[in-house]
Length: 251
Image (cartoon, rainbow, N blue to C red; front, side, top):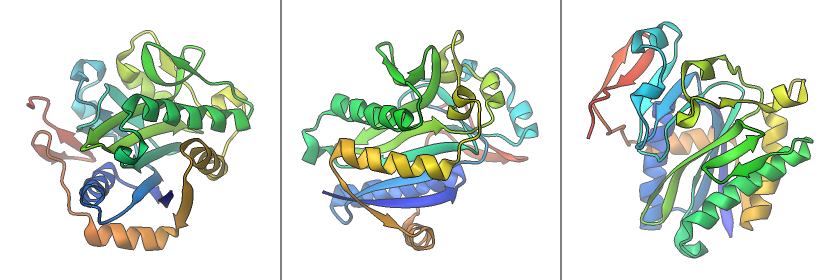
Protein backbone atom coordinates (compact mmCIF):
# COMPACT_ATOMS: atom_id res chain seq x y z
CA UNK A 1 0.00 0.00 0.00
CA UNK A 2 1.09 3.56 -0.71
CA UNK A 3 1.75 6.20 1.94
CA UNK A 4 2.67 9.79 1.10
CA UNK A 5 5.48 11.29 3.17
CA UNK A 6 5.63 15.05 3.77
CA UNK A 7 9.03 16.16 5.11
CA UNK A 8 8.27 19.65 6.37
CA UNK A 9 11.19 20.95 8.42
CA UNK A 10 10.31 23.21 11.35
CA UNK A 11 6.56 23.73 11.81
CA UNK A 12 4.72 25.58 14.58
CA UNK A 13 2.52 23.23 16.62
CA UNK A 14 -0.72 25.06 15.85
CA UNK A 15 -0.06 24.82 12.11
CA UNK A 16 0.78 21.12 12.29
CA UNK A 17 -2.37 20.50 14.29
CA UNK A 18 -4.47 22.19 11.59
CA UNK A 19 -2.85 20.06 8.93
CA UNK A 20 -3.56 16.88 10.88
CA UNK A 21 -7.17 17.90 11.39
CA UNK A 22 -7.65 18.46 7.68
CA UNK A 23 -5.88 15.25 6.64
CA UNK A 24 -7.93 13.29 9.18
CA UNK A 25 -11.20 14.50 7.66
CA UNK A 26 -9.97 13.78 4.15
CA UNK A 27 -8.76 10.29 5.09
CA UNK A 28 -12.07 9.45 6.76
CA UNK A 29 -13.97 10.62 3.69
CA UNK A 30 -11.66 8.69 1.39
CA UNK A 31 -10.46 11.83 -0.42
CA UNK A 32 -6.81 11.01 0.29
CA UNK A 33 -4.68 8.02 1.20
CA UNK A 34 -2.40 7.36 4.16
CA UNK A 35 0.04 10.16 4.97
CA UNK A 36 3.08 10.51 7.22
CA UNK A 37 4.08 14.02 8.32
CA UNK A 38 7.72 14.33 9.43
CA UNK A 39 8.84 17.58 11.02
CA UNK A 40 10.38 19.38 13.95
CA UNK A 41 8.63 21.83 16.26
CA UNK A 42 9.88 25.04 17.85
CA UNK A 43 10.01 24.70 21.65
CA UNK A 44 6.56 23.44 22.68
CA UNK A 45 4.99 21.59 25.59
CA UNK A 46 1.81 19.58 25.00
CA UNK A 47 -0.50 17.92 27.50
CA UNK A 48 -2.70 15.01 26.43
CA UNK A 49 -6.24 14.15 27.50
CA UNK A 50 -5.12 12.04 30.45
CA UNK A 51 -2.47 14.55 31.47
CA UNK A 52 -2.33 17.07 34.26
CA UNK A 53 -1.07 20.64 34.42
CA UNK A 54 0.56 19.60 37.70
CA UNK A 55 3.21 17.83 35.62
CA UNK A 56 4.34 21.20 34.28
CA UNK A 57 6.77 22.34 36.96
CA UNK A 58 6.95 26.05 36.10
CA UNK A 59 4.37 28.76 35.57
CA UNK A 60 2.89 29.75 32.20
CA UNK A 61 4.73 33.05 32.59
CA UNK A 62 8.04 31.20 32.94
CA UNK A 63 7.30 29.16 29.83
CA UNK A 64 6.46 32.33 27.94
CA UNK A 65 9.69 33.98 29.06
CA UNK A 66 11.60 31.00 27.66
CA UNK A 67 9.68 31.15 24.38
CA UNK A 68 7.98 27.79 24.94
CA UNK A 69 4.46 27.31 23.61
CA UNK A 70 1.91 25.32 25.61
CA UNK A 71 -1.06 23.35 24.28
CA UNK A 72 -3.64 21.03 25.84
CA UNK A 73 -4.46 18.65 23.02
CA UNK A 74 -6.70 15.75 22.06
CA UNK A 75 -4.14 12.93 22.00
CA UNK A 76 -3.76 10.30 24.67
CA UNK A 77 -1.01 10.48 27.25
CA UNK A 78 0.36 13.10 29.58
CA UNK A 79 2.88 15.93 29.12
CA UNK A 80 5.78 16.00 26.71
CA UNK A 81 8.22 18.46 25.19
CA UNK A 82 8.95 19.12 21.51
CA UNK A 83 11.85 21.14 20.18
CA UNK A 84 14.53 21.45 17.52
CA UNK A 85 16.59 18.31 17.06
CA UNK A 86 13.59 16.07 17.74
CA UNK A 87 12.07 14.12 14.86
CA UNK A 88 8.29 14.19 15.11
CA UNK A 89 6.10 11.86 13.07
CA UNK A 90 2.35 12.19 12.58
CA UNK A 91 0.97 9.19 10.67
CA UNK A 92 -2.57 9.68 9.36
CA UNK A 93 -3.34 6.04 8.65
CA UNK A 94 -6.61 4.16 8.24
CA UNK A 95 -6.48 1.12 10.50
CA UNK A 96 -9.60 -0.41 8.94
CA UNK A 97 -7.30 -1.76 6.25
CA UNK A 98 -4.94 -3.12 8.90
CA UNK A 99 -7.19 -5.23 11.08
CA UNK A 100 -8.53 -2.42 13.30
CA UNK A 101 -5.86 -3.36 15.80
CA UNK A 102 -4.70 -0.33 17.78
CA UNK A 103 -2.38 -2.35 20.00
CA UNK A 104 -0.62 -3.76 16.95
CA UNK A 105 -0.33 -0.25 15.50
CA UNK A 106 1.38 1.07 18.64
CA UNK A 107 3.63 -1.98 18.76
CA UNK A 108 4.63 -1.39 15.14
CA UNK A 109 5.40 2.29 15.80
CA UNK A 110 7.66 1.22 18.63
CA UNK A 111 9.24 -1.44 16.43
CA UNK A 112 10.05 1.02 13.64
CA UNK A 113 11.68 3.32 16.19
CA UNK A 114 13.61 0.49 17.86
CA UNK A 115 14.97 -0.69 14.52
CA UNK A 116 15.94 2.87 13.62
CA UNK A 117 17.89 3.18 16.85
CA UNK A 118 19.59 -0.15 16.14
CA UNK A 119 20.84 1.27 12.85
CA UNK A 120 22.84 3.77 14.94
CA UNK A 121 24.07 1.22 17.47
CA UNK A 122 21.54 2.11 20.18
CA UNK A 123 19.60 -0.58 22.01
CA UNK A 124 16.12 0.73 22.73
CA UNK A 125 13.33 -1.24 24.35
CA UNK A 126 9.73 -1.23 25.47
CA UNK A 127 8.32 -0.71 28.94
CA UNK A 128 5.22 -2.71 29.77
CA UNK A 129 3.95 0.06 32.03
CA UNK A 130 4.18 2.82 29.43
CA UNK A 131 4.21 3.09 25.66
CA UNK A 132 7.21 4.57 23.90
CA UNK A 133 10.84 3.55 23.47
CA UNK A 134 13.29 3.59 26.35
CA UNK A 135 17.02 3.33 26.88
CA UNK A 136 17.21 1.85 30.34
CA UNK A 137 14.84 4.08 32.36
CA UNK A 138 15.10 7.13 30.14
CA UNK A 139 12.62 7.84 27.37
CA UNK A 140 14.16 8.39 23.95
CA UNK A 141 10.91 8.33 21.96
CA UNK A 142 7.43 9.26 23.16
CA UNK A 143 4.18 8.03 21.61
CA UNK A 144 0.78 9.68 21.97
CA UNK A 145 -2.19 9.02 19.70
CA UNK A 146 -5.75 9.79 18.80
CA UNK A 147 -7.92 7.48 16.69
CA UNK A 148 -11.12 8.69 15.02
CA UNK A 149 -13.21 6.23 13.02
CA UNK A 150 -10.08 4.05 12.92
CA UNK A 151 -7.92 6.81 11.42
CA UNK A 152 -4.87 7.80 13.45
CA UNK A 153 -3.48 11.23 14.26
CA UNK A 154 -0.63 12.50 16.45
CA UNK A 155 2.18 9.94 16.69
CA UNK A 156 5.78 9.84 17.93
CA UNK A 157 8.62 12.13 18.93
CA UNK A 158 12.18 10.79 18.71
CA UNK A 159 14.90 12.73 20.51
CA UNK A 160 17.74 12.85 18.00
CA UNK A 161 19.99 15.74 19.03
CA UNK A 162 17.58 17.86 21.02
CA UNK A 163 18.40 20.13 23.94
CA UNK A 164 17.19 18.05 26.89
CA UNK A 165 17.17 20.94 29.37
CA UNK A 166 13.46 21.80 28.83
CA UNK A 167 12.50 18.28 29.94
CA UNK A 168 13.47 19.43 33.45
CA UNK A 169 10.48 21.79 33.32
CA UNK A 170 8.04 18.87 33.21
CA UNK A 171 7.48 15.37 34.51
CA UNK A 172 7.88 13.68 31.11
CA UNK A 173 4.83 11.52 30.39
CA UNK A 174 3.82 12.10 34.02
CA UNK A 175 6.86 10.40 35.54
CA UNK A 176 8.63 12.25 38.34
CA UNK A 177 11.29 9.53 38.69
CA UNK A 178 12.30 9.17 35.04
CA UNK A 179 13.93 11.45 32.54
CA UNK A 180 14.50 11.81 28.84
CA UNK A 181 17.53 11.04 26.73
CA UNK A 182 18.53 11.50 23.11
CA UNK A 183 20.47 9.63 20.46
CA UNK A 184 23.24 12.21 20.71
CA UNK A 185 23.48 11.82 24.47
CA UNK A 186 23.60 8.03 24.28
CA UNK A 187 26.22 8.05 21.52
CA UNK A 188 28.24 10.94 22.91
CA UNK A 189 28.31 12.70 19.54
CA UNK A 190 26.15 14.77 17.25
CA UNK A 191 23.50 13.07 15.13
CA UNK A 192 21.70 14.72 12.23
CA UNK A 193 17.92 14.61 11.94
CA UNK A 194 18.33 14.09 8.18
CA UNK A 195 20.35 10.91 8.69
CA UNK A 196 17.85 9.56 11.20
CA UNK A 197 14.93 10.45 8.93
CA UNK A 198 16.44 8.37 6.13
CA UNK A 199 16.69 5.29 8.32
CA UNK A 200 13.31 5.90 9.98
CA UNK A 201 11.58 5.94 6.60
CA UNK A 202 13.20 2.66 5.62
CA UNK A 203 12.21 1.03 8.90
CA UNK A 204 8.69 2.50 8.85
CA UNK A 205 8.11 1.09 5.35
CA UNK A 206 9.54 -2.25 6.42
CA UNK A 207 7.48 -2.66 9.58
CA UNK A 208 4.19 -1.36 8.18
CA UNK A 209 4.72 -2.98 4.77
CA UNK A 210 4.09 0.27 2.94
CA UNK A 211 5.47 1.83 -0.21
CA UNK A 212 6.47 5.38 0.65
CA UNK A 213 6.20 8.29 -1.76
CA UNK A 214 8.20 11.28 -0.53
CA UNK A 215 6.59 14.59 -1.52
CA UNK A 216 8.97 17.58 -1.89
CA UNK A 217 8.65 19.98 1.04
CA UNK A 218 7.59 22.95 -1.10
CA UNK A 219 4.83 20.92 -2.73
CA UNK A 220 3.72 19.43 0.60
CA UNK A 221 3.44 22.84 2.25
CA UNK A 222 1.51 24.25 -0.70
CA UNK A 223 -0.98 21.39 -0.55
CA UNK A 224 -1.40 21.55 3.21
CA UNK A 225 -1.68 25.34 3.43
CA UNK A 226 -4.31 25.35 0.71
CA UNK A 227 -6.47 22.88 2.58
CA UNK A 228 -5.57 23.09 6.28
CA UNK A 229 -8.32 25.01 8.02
CA UNK A 230 -8.73 23.06 11.25
CA UNK A 231 -8.44 24.74 14.64
CA UNK A 232 -7.41 23.79 18.13
CA UNK A 233 -10.70 23.22 19.91
CA UNK A 234 -9.84 21.89 23.38
CA UNK A 235 -10.21 24.93 25.60
CA UNK A 236 -10.13 28.61 24.75
CA UNK A 237 -6.80 29.54 23.24
CA UNK A 238 -5.20 32.92 23.72
CA UNK A 239 -1.89 34.52 22.86
CA UNK A 240 0.55 35.52 25.61
CA UNK A 241 3.92 36.92 24.63
CA UNK A 242 5.86 34.23 22.74
CA UNK A 243 3.74 31.33 23.95
CA UNK A 244 0.33 30.06 22.95
CA UNK A 245 -1.49 29.00 26.08
CA UNK A 246 -4.67 26.96 26.39
CA UNK A 247 -6.72 27.35 29.52
CA UNK A 248 -6.43 24.50 31.99
CA UNK A 249 -10.14 24.55 32.84
CA UNK A 250 -11.35 22.46 29.94
CA UNK A 251 -13.99 19.82 29.46
